[in-house]
Length: 196
Image (cartoon, rainbow, N blue to C red; front, side):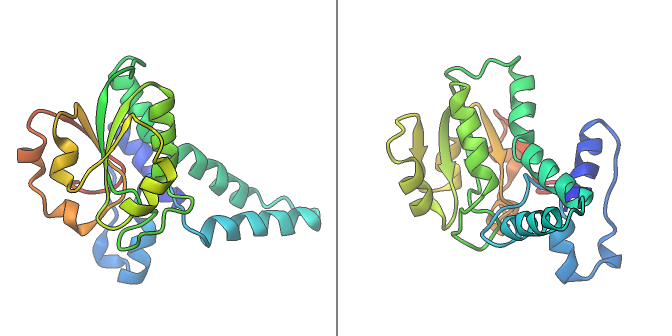
């Protein structure tokens, strides 16, 4: 995962790299797709536990520490792109975010990259329109008191009056939307490979 995120970062610098889908088993492919970082209840906890166990026996598990560091950075990568586009001024801007669960096909938001993204955008003065096919109740409970957030009933509703769209979690639903038509007036930031 961290390797794929590194490849994505290089791609953002105008170096084109693609993973050959034919040589990767379907089970492994989902772990190699670049995105906004990993989350959930298991993998982050397992990485932290292995680092702690290695520290206890005086083994410097550098690669896992690097994975944790890359993941923390990756969760804020879209924010950096958005800030750069708007010359570090997000005050009063309206952004749509699609996909809030830590991965598609779940309502689980534990350690979800979207949580970091939402917090950072709000900290920089943005207003947000959020949509996820199944995780909305959890996100609403998490951010219910923040008046700068509008919880939307559909992906299209989230784009109404938004200046830009951030695709955070790669749901099939978002792949099926005509982004060119939907985003005719918006700038799009893609955390994964939708539309790639």
